[in-house]
Every structure is written in structure tokens, then in C-alpha cells.
Image 1 (cartoon, rainbow, N blue to C red):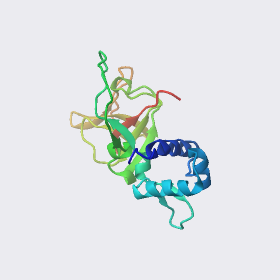
Image 2 (cartoon, helix red, strand yellow; image 1 turned 135 degrees about the vertical axis):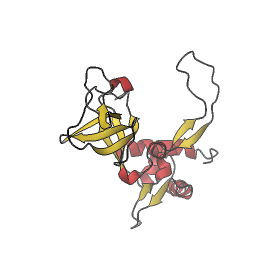
Image 3 (tube, rainbow, N blue to C red; image 1 turned 90 degrees about the vertical axis):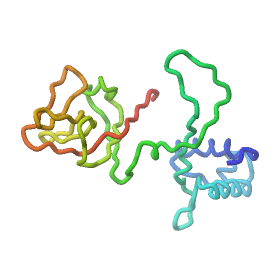
Image 4 (cartoon, rainbow, N blue to C red; image 1 turned 120 degrees about the vertical axis):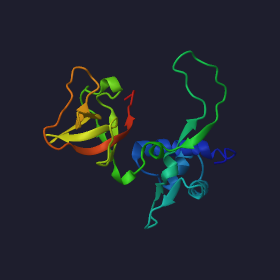
Length: 196
């Protein structure tokens, strides 16, 4: 997107508006938000449509966000978790979190984590587990399994030829199912929010 006409700044305002209201406003409201006329708002939204950020609904009565609308900048430099390093202007590429974490959108669900049995693996209560629904799991995968009609998140392992579920907290025992172990899905990502 060209920065010559301040479209990136206006797109940021539109994204903030959408985050609060979950809708793209009318052209008149866009004009009010950006400080320009309704015809200028129409040209702006049409530029966004041309670049794939928004599209018209099938019945052509409203603008809705496209996938690109939810892109976030991915900075090319890494952040030091040790000693700080000097950083000048660092370039960033568009990045869509869903494309990074989700391989199969139809089979992927988010499940809130409850409890601390996986804390030593860095999986904490309140995290959102990104789980791809599949029975295909291998030893070492973190899986959501169904044991005695309850869901649990553990590491899949094999002991003496039997599948078991290993916690990552020494306060919890290894789960050795008596019957068949049913795998609901495999953990493919984790979402954690630090500020509420």
C-alpha cells in the first residue's frame, strides 16, 4: 500500500474502529473518522478494495474485511531476550497470524486451558490452545485426548507398548488409560495475552 496518500494511517484508524465495533462504517462515518469528504471516503475504500483489504457483501449492501485486513507487521529483526541491541528503523512484512498457526481452518479450534498440569512445558491456565482436530498423533505431540469422558491436554508417549499421556508438572501422574485412548486433536499453537 502506498504511503504517499496516508492510506496506511487511515487503514490503521479503520482497523481500530473495526476492533471496537466489529463492522466497517458507512462512507459518511469513514469521512468523519479520517477528516475528509464522503467522495474522498469512497475513493479510499475503493483503493482498499483494489488492494484486497475489503470487499462488498454478496448482496452489495456493505463493506466487509478481507483476510488482508487482519495482517499484522512481522518485523524482520529478532528481539533479544538477553542483552539489548541497538535497533534503528526495522523493516516489516505483512503477516497473517492465522496463516502462521492454522494449517487447516475447518479442523482447527481454540480451547481455553484450565489447570497447571502442563506448566513446565510453558502451557498455562488461561492460554488458548490452538488444536487441529485429527486422530493422527505421534509420540511427543501435545494432544487433547478424551479419557473417561473428560478432555485433557498432555504429551502423547508410549510405555511398554501402551499409549500414555504425560503431564509436564511433577505434581501430576502419568495417565495410563484402561481402555482405548481417543485423540481429539493435536496442539499446533498457543495464544497468550499478557495485558487485558
